[in-house]
Amino acid sequence: MIKNIQPLSRRKPLAILISALLVPHLAYSQETDTSTENEADESVEKISVVGSRIRNDGFDRALPVEVIMADDAISQGIGDVAELLRYSTVAAGSPQATAALSTAFIQEGGPGAETVSLRGLGANRTLVLLNGRRVGPAGTRGQVSSFDFNVLPLSAVERLEILKDGASSIYGSDAVAGVVNIITKKGDGGNIDASYTQPVESGGEAFRVNATYGAANDKGSFRVTADYNLQKELAKGDREYFRCGQRYAFDAETGERADLIDPRTGDYQCRDLLWGHVWLYDYQDIFTGDTNRPGSANLIQYDYDGQLGNYVPPYMVDPNNPYHTGTPDGWYPVGYDSASDAVLDYQHPFFDLTSLVPRNERATAFASGEYQVTDTMMVYGEALLNRRKTTINGYRQYWGYIYNSNFDFANFDVVDGAGNPLSAGWTGANWLSPTPITDHSGSVTEVDYHRFVVGLTGDITDTWYFDMSYQYSKSDGDYTTKIIYDDAISDQNFLAGSCEGTTTSVRGVDCIDIPWLSPATMRG
Image (cartoon, rainbow, N blue to C red; front, side):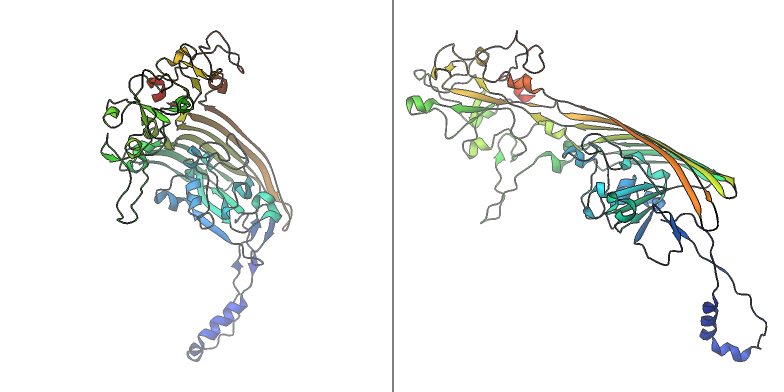
């Protein structure tokens, strides 16, 4: 973390003496030169320890600093600062918060945030500096206490300086794991750069375009950078190896695959999430001592493609036994033996639409400059503006509890018309728990980040200097999540009829009947 370079004069008579000792044979072929050579001065860089601002020549202590040049990373196809940091030795091997992980886990900063944890101690223990000054956190939800690397484009960065030692004695507890100092570009010139990443298969494409320009003279310098980055969504269905989660069971003796084969597809059964089933809570054996439920079947599944009846039988109902479980046409008991297990609905089109890598769109403008007011005084400033939008798609399952059409649960007996009229066709000594699936899930996160710095630095004497600055940063985030209100579901549990004409218990809005047992509702 080198800063504020000053020349320091040092004599080097020892170097001259060593050179003379290394070539003694030349002295015999030369005349003695009685003139005294002027000893050359050696320029040694003086460094300033960022944070403490203590200047020294750097020889009193060797700091373990890893320096990564941004231009080298760009040429290798690395597109952002967080990805570059993950390649560093001190971050490699440690779990890192990425936009992809935020689709499956709750993390600091909310969905889409990208932070860095050095030595596996967490992002809250890794201090991030921008040109030697702290930067404010960004994000939504959870702990918004870490710097989100989405806010700064790689095109504005010259290098990363990573202090791999703990530095809490200088910076505080947020530097226990180390310090990352991001140094931005300076100097003359500019360029426009664009890149497009296209995987072999569709999904996960990335597009980036940026422009930067700077100028410098004896009095000062400035640089302006604009960057736009779009990471398209990679969904589960975009890759064959994510589309169908299989058990991969093998026979211990033969080593052959032992997975069930779904006869409807002729391939190994996908086993992601059971969906669209009615769970049966059956009491008929209490009344008659027998049951028409095959095996231990407690799942009832609808025949959406007209093939299910070819592989499993329907309920066989004795018309003289009112306690037998009865269902409308098209519903079959499943999950009670290997044949009925093989036709369980575990795979749904909503699964393929689930985000693995979310769509992440960000736009950034960054400007920095400095001006030499006098020979010993300089004013400087920085401005950083960033907007990020992260979109995540998903699915969810929900369930309720409902009476069938003729079971009087209060008196615990089958009585015609005593059940729920919304459960027409469902009969017997039982009650039901349908489990529909829906794509009413996912989130959209928008974060606006602003940071401004203005400062003045200068020399007081040859050994004393000052550096004072003012910084303002703000993270303003909005997130929208598709939700299902609990009272819309729970208020309809175990109703004996329609809820229309009433209001929900929490929100106080009009209650709407959910067609729980409709195949279309169960399918989403």
